Length: 309
Image (cartoon, rainbow, N blue to C red; front, side):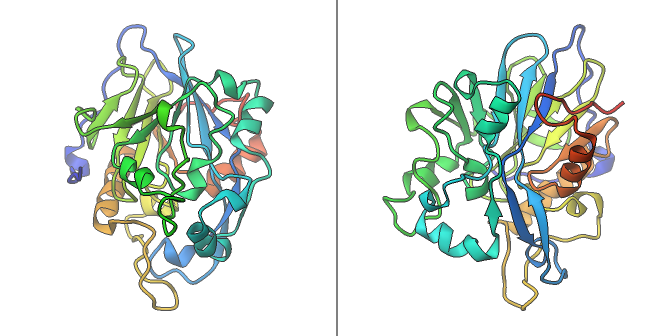
């Protein structure tokens, strides 16, 4: 389900808060560390590596006990990944997991077995994590991810997708019909709790089924966009001159996105979104947010990300 960009001049305002508006408390979760080659992310960059987090998030509804986790980061057990994943990424994007999402939850006072829902942005190795500790959770994926799971490893020995990434009997795939509302510059969204507190956004440029989250963070109009891999560097959103990488520093064609044209459109939509009042964003590999948050020591569970004033 592709979509076209609405220009920043035509970007609709985000919905005004209702009386007693519900919103989401958001906490970051440690989910592993990855080194990303910048020439594969931003066109024209040299082959240098940026040490980045692979962030996950815990979101809790302000008016109820409803909650969910967005993404599960990197699996600690590297050997459990498909052979093609290990072959391709072990040296290109080396990673480590000092603390898993389940451990981050426990450290923050949340029992993984009590988590109700896990929303997975997409099925790449640095986002699926380990679903096993979340024994009662429903898993929500973009609908196009079903094909990747059906054709996953080990059934297809050449697949990069682990077929057991999520427990299939507890996995819900969002369909085109589910993305039946628009919000801001995004024409395809799901009002997740039906009260305007949080939206799941269809952003298909990065890979099949890629979804992101737009959440209210206060009752009076603050918002946070959690972008997954809609972009791998903040500059692609904050700097209009930055372009998605299409060619490695060696000159070899390489793109981090399945559909670079659609990915560029998705990024332009995010750029338009964050120009609206009181909207902030965090992407999965947001090293700047990570470094600043660690120094402040309050954004990670049991702390919370402070809404924009």
